[in-house]
Length: 368
Image (spheres, helix red, strand yellow):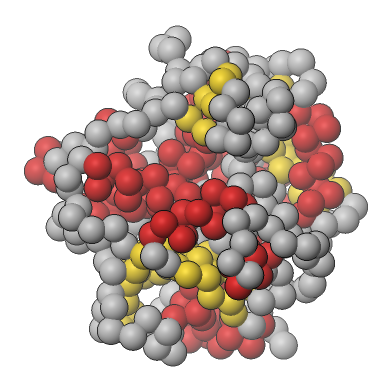
């Protein structure tokens, strides 16, 4: 087994050796980052490489994958002048979470745990279950009650053990973390494990390649736990440090107005969450996270990029989902949040890309 980069705590600097099953900082119990600063390959050198996210091998902390399902390289299509959509719902498990899940499954395969454990509101769980099935790894997925039945069906179809937790997304996360310290357990957390972020960053590497070596003025991302946004920030930093882009795009983070702890903190010019966010019903179930563990990192990444936070109402989500469907794009209700935020001109004349993160088959249409 090749050696893995060390992890470190971004809060107190505590280091965790590569190849460990430790899933959080042993001092503060917070998420870990990866001690890994790669240099991307120039655009011309990508010609002829494998047509998946593994074409960006120099930027990935694991090499020579054995569990790939061909994830990545999703289409970029125009929505209107200056705004395009990246169709990440065309991934193998029908959501962008495959980008990070394949890295977690690949890492787990090399660490040879007794079991893999994950918690999710649905899409990350289905992705972890699928890639664990590909790797022949036993998997248990914790989900909150009220999770979309189609997502539950998909998790079980991949052979994972399903644990439905009474309560909300936070209760589900707490239940999973209580079990994550059991000996021989690999906690495939898309929030705590930094390998997931190094998978999601390929979203921006693909944008850069498909746009001919440039990036749009604005990258719009939905934010719950912030894994796509933080991955995007990693990729932008890598490309900029290598001199492959001459400016950094602004990151626009989108939350549901019903559950918007980060947007609230942003409005208070705070560096961390402010107060307690209550869970309210929302069609955007995938980003309804009241206390994201990487809140400080998310707020800093948006601030450093010159971006901002936007919120969307339930009516905006419903209208955006119908609008996309009328354009031939059937997207789940969480996945339309970014289009809901910008389709009526919030970006002015700036160019932008929005991700369509999950397929409509996962939730159906949002109903009033």
